[in-house]
Amino acid sequence: MAERKKASIALVLGSGAARGWAHIGVIHELAERGIIPDMVVGSSVGAVVAGAYASGNLDQFEDWISSLGRVDIIRLLDAKMTGGGFLQGKSLMSAIEKRIGNPRIEDLPIPYACVATELGTGREVWLREGSLLDACRASIALPGMFAPSRFSDDQLLVDGGLVNPVPVSLARAMGGDIVIAVNLNGDLIGRHFFVHERDESASDEESERLLLEYEEKDTVVAKWAAKMKAGFGIRLDSYISSLRRKESPDPGLFDVMAGSIDIMQDRITRSRMAGEPPDVHITPKLSHVGLMDFDRAAESIREGRDAIRRQHLELEKLAGFNRAHDKQKPSRD
Image 1 (tube, helix red, strand yellow):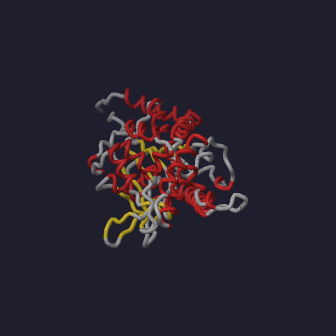
Image 2: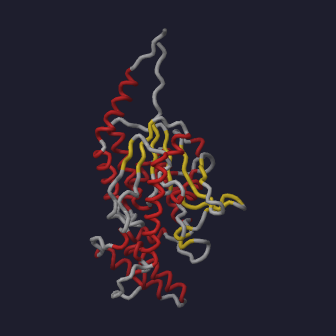
Image 3: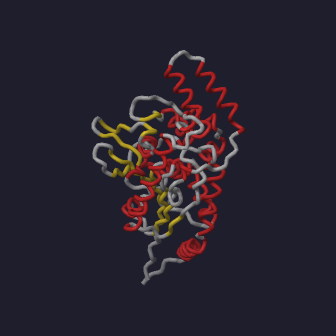
C-alpha cells in the first residue's frame, strides 16, 4: 500500500495592529504541542509576524518587541502631515528589517504570503514573491495612519485587513489542507468608547519631556507634531481626545476612526469566514489592548498562548494525527 500523503498545515495570522503580538504566543504554544505549520500567511500585523517566523527570526523579533517602551515607540513614528497618512513608516520598517532582514519571499524556508488592498480598485492583492519587507509594509498600511505603499506608478497598496482580515482563502489557495486561523477582532466592538484601566504614571514624565523639547521649536507644525507624538506615547488610540477639553464626553477623531476600523474588520471577518471557514479558529481575548498599544507585548503574547490552551481538544487531535503520520512507514503493494 502506498504511503498516505501528509496533510499540509497552514497557519493564518489575522490583522489587529498591536494586538498582533498575540500571534507570537500562538506560534510558541503550537510548537510546544508538536504542531509546526508547513506554510504561513498573514494580513496587516499578521503579515509582519508571519514574515518573522518564515524567515527564521521570530525569537529575535520577539526580543525586540518585548523590550519596547512607549518612548521607544514614539521614536519609531515618523509623523508627517502629507503623503496620505500620519506616519510614513520608514523608521518602523528600518527597525523591523534589522530583526528579520529583507529576503525575497520565494527564498524563505517555508511558503509565505500576505494580503494587501489596491487603493484604486479595492481589489485584494496576494503578495507571494519579491521583497518580504515591501510586502509587509504594504499589508500594514492602515488608512489614515500609514501612508499607502507604492508598488508601481499606478498601484497604491493599503492594509490587507480592509478586504481580508483573516486570509483563510489565501491559505487554501496555497495548498493548505488543515487551516489554523487566528482572529484578533472577535471582541472589540465599542472598545474605544470605554475607559480601560492602565498604569500611565511610568511614562508620563518621559512623554512630557519629549513634548517640551519639541515646543522649544518656534513653528505651529512643530508644536502640533509634539502634541501628536506625546499623545502617541500616552495612548495613541486617544491622542486626539487628549487635545480636547477634559470635560467633553465626546470621543476624539482617532477614537471614532479606530472604533470604525474595528467594526469594519469584525464584519468583514465574520462574512469571509462564514464562506471560508478554517479547520481551527483561534480567538484571543484582546479587547483590553488598544490599536497601537505596541508596548504591551507581554500581555498579548500571554493571551495568544491562553487562546491555544482553550482550543486544546481540537489541537490535540491535530497533533495526534501528525504524530501518527510521522510514525507511519511506507510500504509496497
